[in-house]
Amino acid sequence: MNKIKRFFYLLNPSDFIVIIFYSILTILNVIFYSRIPYSSLLILANMFLFLFIFCVAYFDDDNKTTIWTHFHRWYIVPLVFLSFKEVYIMLRPIRPVDFDYLLIQIDQFLFGGDPTHFLHQIANPVMTEILQISYATFFFLPVLLGIELLIKKEIDNFYFATFLILYGFFLSYIGYLIVPAIGPRFTLHNFSTINKDLPGLFFTKYLRDYVNAGESIPKGTINPINFVQRDVFPSGHTQMTLIVMYLSVKFKVKLKPFFLVVGTLLIFSTVYLWYHYVIDVIAGIIFMIFTVWSGYNIYNWWQQKRGAKEFRYKN
Image: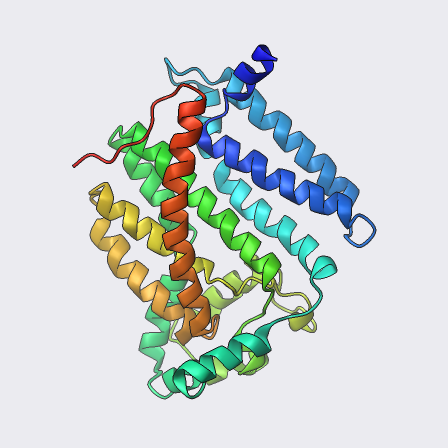
């Protein structure tokens, strides 16, 4: 038993939270086995992921940087996207009802109407172009933060940041499973005419195609409303961008002004560009606060369990 514990404690906090999250997904795949397409393949892939994580944790040498160290630090980048897709495959068979009607009612109660319609009155191609570019930077912001921390050799900060960002993504995915929704570009606006109704300048159309492809509706998809990811509540773009902004301030990174400016534009763009309701943004803020508070405690609890160094912010 002690040998098993020691082997398990090789996992760093990011590994630990991956094991927990994918254990939940695996259990759901077993429970809803007959409903979820490719459930056997998903369970097998999850088992392979567990094996991979234990291998990189075992072979990663704390005393020197090896190829295993690089795998250990960066495997979570593609994993975030792969997790997003596994949740996508599982979500509709488990939760076939969309809750947009409820989110719309909350927005209308709070604002006396639909905020996307209000913002459309001030929309112009220049603003749309800037905000669409900002929105498209979403997945790059955490990577840029991690690269700067490694360049500065702030290894403890890097590991805490990667854990917090990964944990935040997983919490947002759980939110999608609980409250699936497709967003105002489908419910309050016409998705098929969005380029005409909310035009940009040079890159907006192409960036929209890029975002749509990431959300499982590549260009030319027939009836995209049936295939788009149910990833509206909470606004993961708001939650994760706020986490990056928060960490950039705490760690005093050189890219802090960039993160703060682009991050602010990105969060505003979530509603302006019709991707989210305002209640999604509010939920994203709440999820961000919970992620930071609980993440700090979970990180140090696991580090303490494995006899490793706990995390403390430097003044």
